[in-house]
Image (cartoon, rainbow, N blue to C red):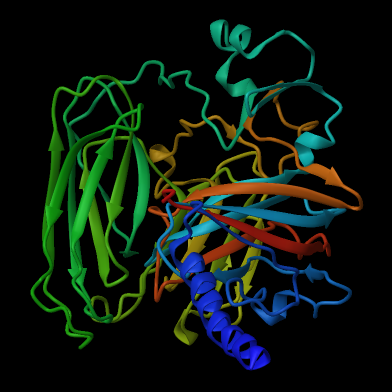
Length: 466
C-alpha cells in the first residue's frame, strides 16, 4: 500500500515539476536566459552556420569559416530586450572579424561590432586603452584620450575604426553657385550620400518611379542630417496606391527637398525606400555630392529601351560588385583595368591603386557596388569629408596616418581560444517569424585564402526581472 501511494505521488509530482520547469523557462523570472551552444551540435535556439559553401563541415567541436559573409539564426522563445553573444574562436590571418545583427531586410543591413581587429592588436605603435576606446600613436604624443581631444591632430592624420573623430571638415575657398547639375543614373532603393553647404539653400529634386515588382507599400522618405547626426529636414511621398507585385510601373514622380538657413558643414542625405523605387535622376545646385557604403545602379527596364549604365569616380582601392540578373552580366572598365561580371549573385572584387580619382564605367547598370570609400557621379562632385576608415585593406605603414582612434576592446584568451562578446539591443534587430539573423563579417578572407575557426556561440538574453 505504501509503495502504491509512493508510486502515485511520483506520477503526480513529475508532471508538476515538468510544468514548473517549463513555466520557469517561459517566464524567465531571473530576467536572464542562457544558451550554451557548441558549433556543430543541434540547438533549438541557435542554428548552424550558413551557407554551406562558405564553411567547412564541423569537426571536433569547431567549424572553419572560409567565405564572407557567414550567418546564423537565433530563435528566442519569447520577448527579450537585449542579447549578448559570446564567440569562442581562433584567428590566424583574417585582419578584421566582426559580428552583426540584421536591422533592415530590404535592403539587408547589419549593425556590426568588432570581435577582433588584428591591425590594432598586432600594431607596434604606442597603444592607449581607456573605457573601451583605443588610441594608437605612431610616435607617442598624448598621455591620455583627454589630451588627444583637447588638442587634436590634423584630421587627415587620423584613421578611425567604429567611432568618429569630431573635428569639423571645412572646404577652403568654397563658394556657392546657382548652377543646377543633374545626376542622370538609375539608383535603386535605399541610398545615402553627403553634401556640403555654405551660405546657400539646400535643394534637391528627386525624379523616381515605383516599379511595383515586390509586394507591399513603397513609401519614399528623404531625410537630411547635420554633423551632429540630428535630422534637420525631411521630404516624404506615400505609396502610389499599387501595393501589389504586378510589375506595373507608375509614371515619373517628383519629390522636392529644400532647407534654408543651414550653417556651414557636411550634411548626410538618406534616401530611404524599398527596392521597388528607382530614382531616375537627381537635380541640385549643390556642388559636392558623394555616395558612401553602397550604390545600387538599377536596371532600366520600363524606362530606357537601351540601358545607359553609369559612370562613377572614386579614390577607393577596393570595390565589391554583383548583379542579380543574367542581363546584368557585363564588363566593368576603368582607365587601367577591366572586371568581368560573369554570373548573377556572385561578388566580384575590383582593385584600384587608390592614389588618384579613378573613373569606373558600368555599361548596362543592374549592379550593386559596396565600398569603404566614396563614390561620385562626376569628378567635380567628389570630396571626402570623412576621416580615413581603418579597414581590412589599410596599410598603416604606407598611409599618411599617425593615429588610429577606435571603439574597440581586444578579445580575451581562454586556453587555446579567443573569446569576445557583443551586446545587441533587440528593439533594433529585424525580427521575422520570431527569429533574429546574425552574420560574421570577415572581409578579405577569400583573397587571403584564410579561415576563421569558430568553437562556440553562447547567448545571454535579458528581459525585466519578475
